[in-house]
Amino acid sequence: MRYRRMPIEVESPEQLGYGNIECNLAESSVSDGLFSQLGLKLDDLVLMYGDHLGKPELRAMIAGEGPLLHAEDVLLTVGAAAALFIVSTSLLEAGDRALVVFPNYATNIETPRQLGCQMDYFQLSFEGGFRIDVDALIARITPETKLVSVTCPHNPTGTMISENDLHRLVEAVENRGCRLLFDETYREMSFGTALPPAASLSQRVISVSSLSKTYGLPGIRTGWILCRDRSLMETFLAAKEQIFISNSVVDEEIAYQFLSRKAEHLERIRAHIDTNFGILKAWMGEQTDYEWVEPQGGVVCFPRIKPESGVDVEKFYSILNTVYKTWVGPGHWFESDRRHMRVGFGWPTADELTRGLNNITQALLAAKD
Ligand SMILES: Cc1ncc(COP(=O)(O)O)c(C=O)c1O
Figure 1 (cartoon, rainbow, N blue to C red):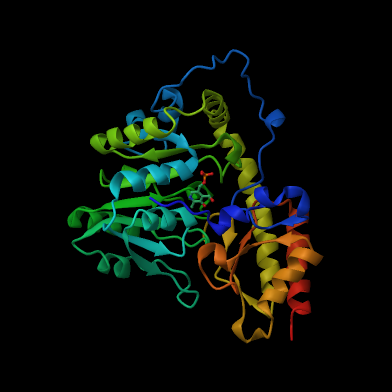
Figure 2 (cartoon, rainbow, N blue to C red):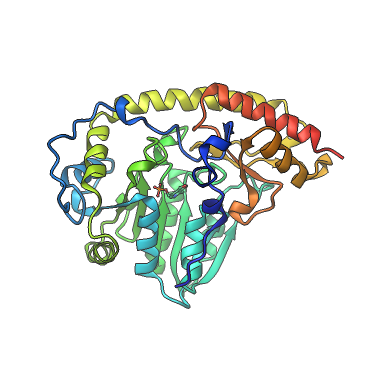
């Protein structure tokens, strides 16, 4: 396998330095949690190797999210990132066919591609409302397809599939004998009713998620794989043991104590997302050079500068970044036209979001021919 740094990581706000950014609309999570505000008790923690699957009580808590899930169906990983890596490297080899929604969170494409898989991209389009047409996706499954990879709510567009479509996709994957990787890292930030954890529906489904996005805890690097196929879980555990043996017991304990008060945290987080989404929606309604597909979940969307707007795209980014010190996720992070950009509305405060959006308006005006 070849490793190559992805632009989304090289140019990420944390690599750029938060101090260089005044309005950060480049994140895909809610605001990062402050340790001192979490009311954690860690003094009695023994700094040993943890259970290789992950802290049992934490796994039981995560399994409690879905019917038919047990603690044994949960493998804790270093973020959803490590979960995705473990799944791809365990299931795929050079020459295998992977059917992957495109665009996507970069790792979902990069890892199978660098493993040498034959990539079948399922392209979403702005004109098609970035809709994942499940019938069309199912039609692309071939007898050689090993893995179908879907992110929902989708990154970078925030679109979702219905529960009925999820069931049909799962059925198709079962009938064709392949597997579904369902990246549901934004699941708990669905605007309507959240889908059930996809892995609860079938042994052929692998769900991946983490505490990074909904809960703003990317710094504790705690994610997981959910899978009801025990023999596959043994392989995933073997991969985990070879890469990092176990998660940090400190991170696991923080995650456990945090999730023990999950309802309280979720209420606060959802209120913040609602407020910010309202600001974004009102601002979008006023735009003439800019258009979007309204997201259905998560805290990102993927609007674009209208092709007919006469805005010089490179000039726009240059002004936005250098004059206004405002950052968004440019299209090339997702191997897409730079006319598109991912706007993250969950991370900034309402005030920072308002300023950031106004800065986009100013940069669009200034970059017109
Ligand atoms: C869809 C999706 N999956 C996985 C990840 C990885 O996140 P983490 O490793 O912090 O859980 C991200 C991060 O942006 C993401 O957007």
